Length: 194
Ligand SMILES: [Zn+2]
Image (cartoon, rainbow, N blue to C red; front, side, top):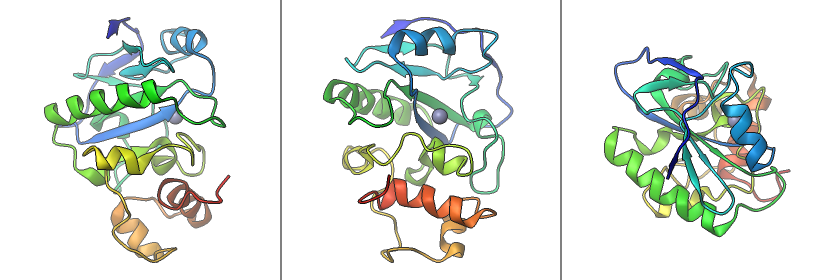
């Protein structure tokens, strides 16, 4: 792990960290690192993982990094205050590399050992910002993470498309129901989703 401090952070406004939020950068590694450390960009994450598995530690887990933006989960809107954020270098249209996922599994288990993060609170950016975001996308290997003890898979309701109340009870903001359904499908029903 390479420590590469970003100035883009502030104090947490939550009693504890109980979420892990996963992203893809959509831009290449050097550009991602530069952007996540650029004060003018006003974005960051706690960690950035390159395609070769190199992990950059950008913001201390004790601090609030700026990755989720306008977001909602289980009725709470300050996702940044209660989460650890990980950015994965990925274009959004290519599979995630093996070394990168191996690094994520090790880092994820490490994070879960330090914070009380329940499986349903391991989410993608699209899950907490369904009207704005589609990362980490339908190619992200959620089932593989869950098999390694990180996150929940499959969705507890086996219905192909659970009722809105079930999605809301799980955590989704269903105010924009089509957006919430699309986010749910990318995470839990990715076959055929683009
Ligand atoms: Zn994101």
